[in-house]
Length: 360
Ligand code: PMP
Image 1 (cartoon, rainbow, N blue to C red):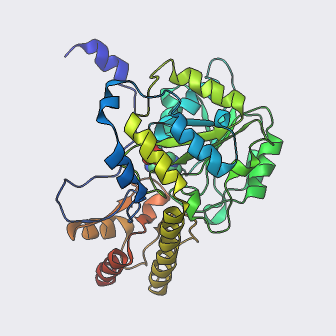
Image 2 (cartoon, helix red, strand yellow; image 1 turned 90 degrees about the horizontal axis):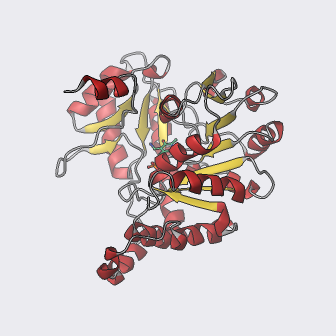
C-alpha cells in the first residue's frame, strides 16, 4: 500500500458506532437508542404510491417536501430549515459552516466534557479547537459555564448524551443571550423524550445565533432511512446550504424525502410512541433503582445507569451481551462506571430486568 494515503489518514480518530447485530440474529438491542416502535403507518402509502420512474432523476436538493413538513410543525418558514443525511451529517456541515478554524482564530468551541462523542471527532477532522467544559455535580450542564467566556461557538446536546440529563429552555436562552456573536448549536436528538421541554426551535426568530439540530432516527423510528434537519435563522441556513453544495448537493434521496414528510406530519404516531417510551423509562428506572442502581433522571429514550457495588459496568455489559442483550458501555474515564441503556418495549425491558437481577 502506498505510504502517502496512510500518512493522510494516520491521525484520524473516527467515531465508533454502537454494534449492529447481523440480520436474523435474535438480540434485545438496547445499545444505539433506536425506537422500539414502528414508524408512521402513513409511510406504507408513500411506498405504495411511489413512482419508481422518478428515481431516474436527481432529488430536490433542498428536500422541499420534507422541510415544508418540518416548517409547518415548528411554525417557521422553509428558509429556516436544512435537511441532511442524518443529523450526523447536519452536525458535520454545521461544524464546517459555522465554527472558525484553528489558525483563523485562537478561540475555541465550548462543549461539555462528557457529551456526544462525535463532537470531538468533528472538531479534530475540521480543525476546530474544542474546549471541554466539565459537567457539574450529577452530570449537570451549568449555563453559567457557557456565559462570559470568549469562544468560537457552543455545542450542547439537550438532553445530553450519554448522561440523559436536560437543561431548560430558560437556561438555553441565557446561553444565547450571553453569546450573541457566535453560533450556538443545540442538538435535540432526544428532546422528544424530555417531558416538560419545548424545542429550542421556539426561539428561532428571536436569536440569530441559534441552530437547533434534530433527527428522524429516534422519536420517529426512522434510523434506517438517515434523515436529520437543522432549524435556524435564514442566514445560517444559507451558509449550511453553501457547504452542502460544495460537497454533495443531493444528500437526501427522493424516497427518504417523502417518507420523512409523511412521518413528520403524523403527529399522532409520534406522540403515542414518545409517551410509551417515557412510561417504560419510568418503570425500568424505578425497578433498577430499587436494586441499587444509581440513575440520573432521564429526559431521553435511554437511561444512564451505574450498577450496584456487586458488579462493575463492564462485566455487566459483557454478561448481558453473552445472553443476547446489547447495551452500550463506554470505556472512558468517569462514564466507564455506567451503562447507557436504550428504552425498548415493555417486554424487552422486563426480559432485560430479569437478566440483570440474575447478575447483581
Ligand atoms: N446527536 C446525538 C446526541 C446522538 O446521540 C446521535 C445518534 N448517535 C446523533 C446526533 C445522530 O443521529 P442521526 O445521525 O441518526 O440523525
